Image (cartoon, rainbow, N blue to C red; front, side):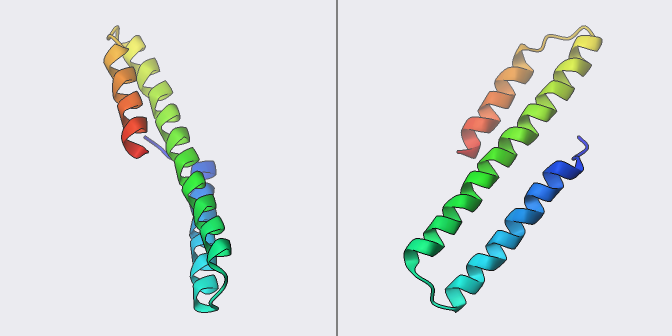
Length: 86
């Protein structure tokens, strides 16, 4: 699978958020503020997992249909990936 710039940019934003959280910790910021930022990163990771799985699923299903293959297992595998990522 080829990862587009949008997905890579999501990861770069998360990387920046994590650096910001480390700075907050070094500056002894309030626990509530650190947790809020960590929760934001976790949500961003979850959304990115969804984007990657859905884009990959579309790509795989189109390829399988083109080859006359059954797509049911691909869909089940994708759902399992999403469930495991939680």
